[in-house]
Structure formats: C-alpha cells, structure tokens
Image 1 (cartoon, helix red, strand yellow):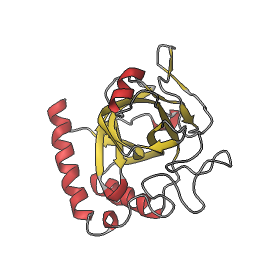
Image 2 (cartoon, helix red, strand yellow):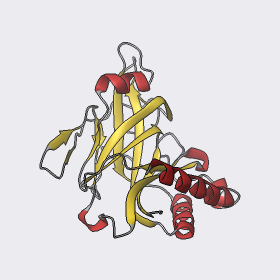
Image 3 (cartoon, one colour):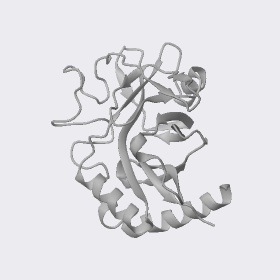
Length: 226
C-alpha cells in the first residue's frame, strides 16, 4: 500500500511541477492570505483578532471528532476550532509532543487555528488545475495554522514544525470515498508548495494525517492504483 501511495505522490509531484510556472507561481493562497494569517478584509473571527503574528490572545473554541465505533476524541491543544464544513477537527498528537514539535520554550503554549478556508482565487485555481489533471475529486477546504502564545502573551503563527504533527478530521457524509477511490489531504502552503498527505487510518468517519507545516488543507479522493 505504501509503495502505491509513494508512486502516486511522485506522479502528483510531476503534475504540480508543470503548474509551478503559472498558478503556483502566484501566491498560492490568493488575495487575503499572506502566509501568516489574513490581511485586509481577512479572518477576524471575534472582532479583535488580527490573525497574524503579535495579535491578541484569541479566545479558545475546542472541538471533537467521533469514530465509527462511537468514541468521542478530543483535541490535545487549545485553539480556535471553527470549521463547519467537516464534523470536527482535532490535534491528535500528545500535547507534550506538539510542544516539542513547535520548538516552544518554557512559558509558551501551543495554539491552533482551524476553520473553513478563506483562501483566495489563486489557491482555488491551483487546486482545481492539479486535481483535474490527476482525476482527483475535491471536497472541503480547511485553513490550518499552527502557532503559539509567546512569553509576551501574544499569538504567533509557526509556518513549519520541527517534526510532523498529527491531526484528525471528521469525514462529511457527502464525501465518503466512492468505489475505486481513497481519501487523502492536499496541502497548499505559502509560495505554492503542494503536498499530497496520506490518510493514516481506516476509520470511515475520520481522516488522519500528519503535517510539518501550516496552510490550506483540502479533502480529496484519489483513484486507487493497482
């Protein structure tokens, strides 16, 4: 299974490279996203949060996901979990692991921001072009920003972690994989870097993935390969 997915990633990377000179050459997340939150008329969920570095401490809104056997799973890290297009989003790596992955020092706290994507037209065009080329079905899009509350009590986003962090997201009923397809996550990062992240579990209600960077995360259904 792993070798099949690796072959698909190589094919996918080649397709992405063909687009680097056009769509991906532009800021992949489009207008409103600067790689460190939203600017202009961007994301201000509680009216006093800029979404970028050095912003005021955001309010905490937690979330859960439910497995196929009925278990409720809770996030290990505080943050703003506001996505409405998927049934739950959580950080599933242990809190101590996330602290180390983010490179935090004593007194700093990990903090996540996950919500329905507010990406601009360039990011959407990037996703549409690549997925159409590869025969991939596109589902919900999420913004996943990893960050911390620093020693000054301010929020700072962290573009890349020292090691990957694990997330679990509920799979919408309308996006269960069709016959001949499997779920994966398409990650689009600042500058246009595109990565296909495999689903790490077989629970039909949850997709599990690991990421070492923030960005736009897209639910996709990828054709199975023999």
